[in-house]
Amino acid sequence: MGLIARAIEEAGIPTLSMSSARDITRSAWPARSVYLDYPLGHTAGRPNDPELNASIMRDTLTAFEALTEPGAMSHLSYRWSDNDDWKDKVFAPVDSEDSSEQSSEYEDDRVARHDTPQYQTEADEAAAEHSHDGEECLVCAGIDY
Amino acid sequence: MTTTPQSLQPPVDYIPRITAQYSGLGYGEYRWLESEEVPAWTPLSKPISESKLGLICTGGIYASGQTAFHFKDDTSYRAIPTDVDLTELRATHFAYDLTDARKDINVVFPLEQLRSMIDEGALGSLAPHAYTLMGGIYSTRRVTEELIPALVQRVIEDEVDVVLLVPV
Image 1 (cartoon, each protein chain N blue to C red):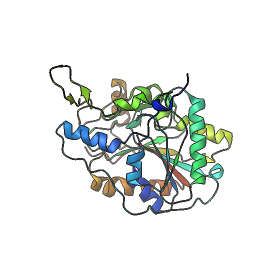
Image 2: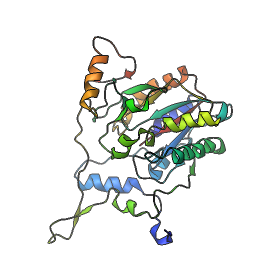
Image 3: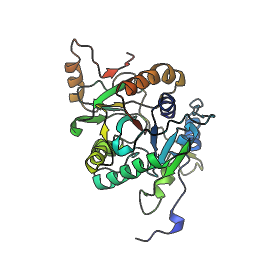
Image 4: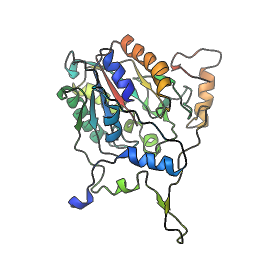
């Protein structure tokens, strides 16, 4: 996403990137960014908490105007919970079930990298087939299969 | 509940943790994007409260009726009308826990809160479409040659004043 932000900024449109992975965003180095210290999958807030999410967005848009240094990052002050124990489990090795082994191992919890559309529901697949029946779709662009 | 300083930790360093996991699983080394040059800078032309905002999100979001993303270097994108009914939105991905995104899509696609900002007068307007991507694309070349030119053209055509990017 950092490459995209940098390219849009270069094309003459100001950008702001939200982030919940500070080091990845710093490495990609977009023009402006705000960091929210939440677990991955919550870049813009918390489920079913519209007031909190509106507050985060209000602060985000305020930062858009306040950041004046190319590449600067603003830290938002929200915390995911009273403690940061969730951080211990992020991409961490899991303890081996076999107690005779001292080492911990990583578990591959990611999904297989299928190269066909992965629908959330079967109804979505039917809806997509129906809406693309004999027509070229203008909104599903750049599909490579 | 009181918060003790001991229970707070600095931001997670994802790059070393993910690199160690990939290597522990026997995958090849992932090359993280490291930008060495200071980013280009375009000043705001007007206050955000008067600006038309374009939204670009990764996280594999699509609307019912659209083709879903796939999981192997998908460089396509979807244009989602910003007046969409939020119940029509879906998320599909290989690399993050989708539980909360499927409960409330606004955690990765902040449409409801951007609409609130317009109601409050903190934001001017939204572009007619938001663009959604898969992310997690290994090939920088394909992002640079295929995806970026298409997206830059779309946001220019939309005549937006600013763009908000929301990666997962």
